[in-house]
Amino acid sequence: MDSGRRKIVAAAGAIAAVGLGGMAMAQETKGGNAGANEQARIDGQTWDGEVWNAPLKGKVAVITGAARGIGRSIAVAMAANGADIVGIDINASVSPIVQYIAATPSDLEETGKLVKQRGRRFLGITADIRDRAALKAAATQATQTMGHVDIVVADAAIQAFKPLLEMEDHDWDDVIANNLTGSCNTLRAFAPAMVQQGKGGRIIFISSMQGRYGTKNGSAYSASKWGIIGLMKSAALELGKYKITVNTIEPGLIDTAMTHNDKRWSEAVGETMTTPPPEHPTEEETAKAKLPRTPLGVPWLQPEEVAPVAVFLATDAAKMVTGACYDVNGGDSAHDLG
Ligand SMILES: NC(=O)c1ccc[n+]([C@@H]2O[C@H](COP(=O)([O-])OP(=O)(O)OC[C@H]3O[C@@H](n4cnc5c(N)ncnc54)[C@H](O)[C@@H]3O)[C@@H](O)[C@H]2O)c1
Image (cartoon, rainbow, N blue to C red):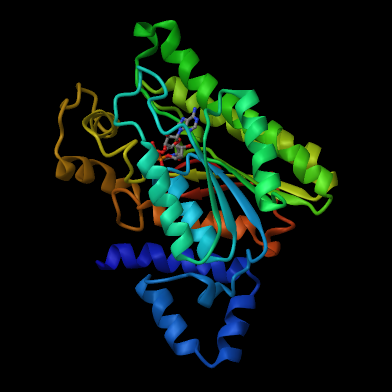
């Protein structure tokens, strides 16, 4: 692991340590394994139950978009921290406007395998977050199979680019219906079970750095992600009385199938140019364009570097955190207003 990547993982470990109010630190000292755990934290090898003392033990987490990318990383991280996982994904193409490869059933199976390797239960469900009836059925199945639902991560989304003046209706409609309405559908399908259980809960939406400022040629995506922040803040106001917290994570550029492609790289390079960007920039050209934005010295992050923040927000230690945005972007957010 190079030194830049080590810094990011160490930062994530620091967030966890602060967020857990020193609980993990105390455990390390008690167990007499402080040196090994601290080294593991620094090396970025693990921040699993040994370090965090399984803060999600006994919890069930539902994660949409769990087949791959950030959703899979959150599923694996929550499992490593003790949670059983319900992974939901469409496992197929979402819309013809999407220009990168679709997730497959074997992707979701792989997530299940990784969860089970961590000793947790996994229930995989193929469903489209635009389909409210399918999500309600998933909520029933999740509750019946797992017993309860404590954490919901609304991660599933798509990204597509089109200048506003060239848009067809579906360029706007498909992104908003999927990302914004689909995220709300997820809350509306699963929150009633949490309310009924009467034990509080955690809802975590995945917004984006692009939900904090505009995106050239990506207005629908940006609008969907700004919308998710409005949805989160409203939901936090409504669900607080049930001890359900609602927060968002705003990842920066993360290396996943959604972004590891010519179109996304070209748009990333284009952010720094007044002339049209190359259609097929190399990975090196893209990295060079992105690097000046991040004080932590990385052009993009790995999905595993987003997941610890989701784990923290799901823990009891975060019970007083609601209505809040958590940027995870190597420091790109140092450029925006708030
Ligand atoms: N990768 C990034 O740079 C980045 C940055 C900021 C925010 N995000 C957000 O993080 C989340 C995950 O993105 P990722 O990079 O892992 O992308 P990804 O494409 O690798 O994963 C997204 C998953 O969501 C699923 N999905 C999409 N629409 C769905 C639907 N209608 N029903 C069910 N499943 C559906 C896909 O099949 C896929 O498995 C998204 O909300 C994305 O907007 C990503």
